[in-house]
Image (cartoon, rainbow, N blue to C red; front, side, top):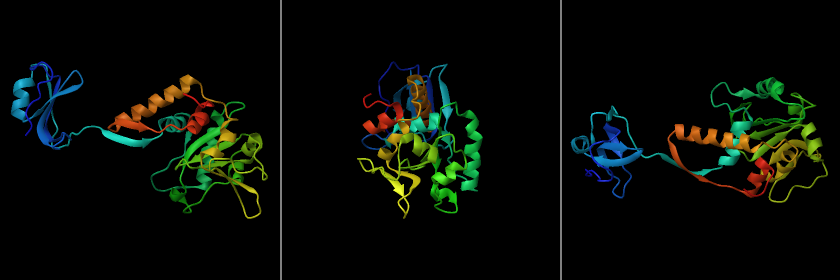
Length: 260
């Protein structure tokens, strides 16, 4: 077992954990019996006897893990914080991970219910529609489907993957995207049917830009609040380190700017 690390002054740990596997993820990937924390920092790991003898004080909180594993926080290596925060913090959440899955009709009702929260001149913006979790399997939204929600309010919905979007005819009109509009540079696609008519399906973020450009941009306070909310949610699940992947298109989509 690893011995106690002399990092801070001994004898006054705030918290000591024991009673379950404590994974150090050090060079030897050792498991230890106990771990001491002082001022938010790990100050010692080792045997229970050694850690408690050298670090426990009268006011130290001692926590029995009761067989649960304690390990460093999870590392999320591929996440888009800005886009995730923009969607989760500012959009209508249409995700559904439990049975029964949504149908086009139930999704329509959820969106209709959200129309009351759309301000004058605003858009109904949502995310989380997953064709693989929709009945019937792989059913996707079309402009005609979204027109059943509203023909007056522009609607933009992002698929659960983030790589596909759906818009109604009002959104197409405001964005100036027609059957003759060429696909945008950068790999985006304005999907058309066999007759060359727009279906309302968008593929890849470059195709989102004409629509996002017409949507009211969030204020800095709204965006920062959304980012903080997403970070807190990640931390609550044990994610303590994340790698951000920022693209200029993402910044432009969320803020209308191409520089941070």
